[in-house]
Amino acid sequence: MEVLDDGTLKLVAEKIKFNSGKKSITLDIDTLKQPMTKVLTCLYSLGYDEIVFESKKPLNPKEVEEVSEFSRQLVGAELTESSETRVKLECLLDIEKIGLESLLRRILNIVSKKIDNIIAFLSNQEIKEVYANQEDLRKIYLMLLRRTVGDRLYGESDLTKNSFVIVNASLLLNTDSMLDKLMDYLKRTPLPGNVSESVKLILGSMNDLLDEIVMSILFPSIKRISNGNTIISQIKNIMNDSMKNSPEILLIYISQILSLMENALSNSSCTIFLEDLPWIERNLTG
Image (tube, rainbow, N blue to C red):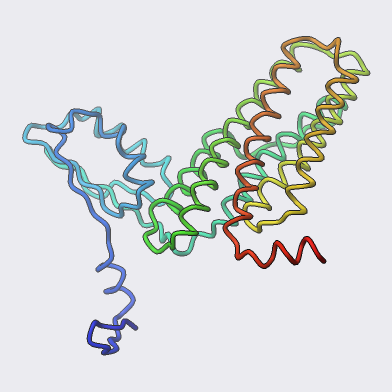
C-alpha cells in the first residue's frame, strides 16, 4: 500500500513495486577506462540491482570471463547478459531481508572461532575445521556494505550508526588477517610454557572483548563499553607483567590485534550518544 501526494491510498502488487524501485546504472567502458571488475565492488555496495557495461568496440573475452568469476564473490549477483559489446549483471539479493545483526554476528563468529583455534593449538588440542576463510569473510563484509550503504530507507541517526558499523567491520577484517599471521608465527615458533599460557589468557580475553565490540554497536550499552575497557586494561597488564621478555614479533602481533579491537570499541561507544538522552540519567541514577 502506498500513499499518493493527494492522500489517495494505492495498492501495488509486490512484484511491480519491487521492479519500480530497481536501481540501475549503465556505464560506458570506453569512457570509464577501468576494468569492469574494479568498479563492480563499488556499485554492488552502493545497492545497484542492475549493472550494465557497454562499449563501442568488442569487449575482451578474458575480461568478460573475469567479470563472471568476480560476480561469484558478490552474494546474489549474477551475469545475466553477455554479448560482444555489452555485459549485464543483476543482483537478486533482497536487501530489506538481510539482518544487520545477523551479518555482524556472522563476522563475530568467524573471528571468534579463529581465536578459539589458536588457543586450541597452544593447548595441543584438536583444531576444529574452519569453514569460513578470508574470502567468505569478505563476502559477508560486502553484503554488510550493501545493507548499510545501498539501502535508501535510513534516517539520519541510522546513517550515522551505519558508518560506525562499516568502519568496525573493516577493523574486524584486519583483525582476522592479523590472527592468521599470528597463527602462522606460532606454528613456526614454539613458545615457552609461561609465555604460551599468557598468550592463551590474552586471546581468551580478546574473545570476550570481541563480543562487547559487536554487541554494543548493535545494542548501545554503557555497561558493555565499560566491560570492554576493563578487558583492554587487563590485557595490557598481562603484556606488561608476564610478557616483557617475549619475542618482539609476538608482542607486535598481539599489540596490533589489540589496537584494532581498541579502535573498534571506541567506535562502538559513539553509538551510545545516538540514543535519546534520558537513558543516560537512568544509568547514572539507577
